Length: 323
Picture 1 (cartoon, rainbow, N blue to C red):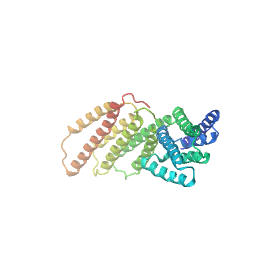
Picture 2 (picture 1 turned 90 degrees about the horizontal axis):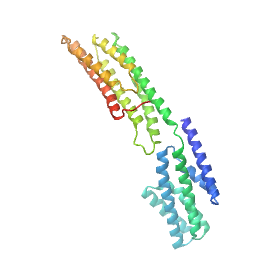
Picture 3 (picture 1 turned 30 degrees about the vertical axis):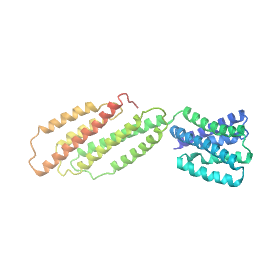
Picture 4 (picture 1 turned 45 degrees about the horizontal axis):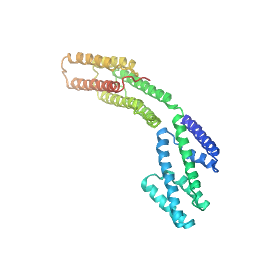
């Protein structure tokens, strides 16, 4: 958050200074206003800046046109100005371009104070908003994105969370005395949701690229965590310890080492398939408790299969993905 504030402040200062200097060099009297309007045109992300700036620009030009028509036909008096503001507000909200209300009214007020319809003066007012908007968009586009490095760190944090989760599950399955339910799954879900919000927010900084691999990656990990939650919930239902739990524990321990941005899913799926085939060779359960335990363990293996399939699907979509 602090980094975002710092970078936004730097961008705002650059836009304000550059807009004011250009306006001054073009002999615009109110060059300070150009810098202020430039500041208003800066949004946190690149996409938001372009979207909002386009709407603001159209809204202000519409205000100048509407104001010129009102003053040209009805004269320069306060009542006309008030009627203009009412019509401008209503139609701007109706057209959903109301983001430029304040700068639009400010520039039309300049025309009102000028007291006459002068083409060069109106063009200067249009130039004020043009410089402000285009400098804001230009600076935001060329300003280097700092977030990608941090996004990769966030994704690696999520990978480590999953490794820790698998480690906890491995220890649990290997314990003949079932542990009480811990709040680990709640903590990991909270952590990944915070990281998802970060990635979602900063994906808006990417322009002209239909590339959402970081977002897809973290959603994939979110789905995997849901699978691990299901595994843990079903593990808690086991009332009688079964020897197959030890094998699953070993598998989870091996799986933990293969959690990364690389595609180890196919290798792990083959291992899991071998494990399931070994389970199928065993004698049928003789008691109800053993039957229920075996059923739960088979379900858990199936969820592990789904856990790996999610990763395999991701790599099919993004074969060159790397953190």
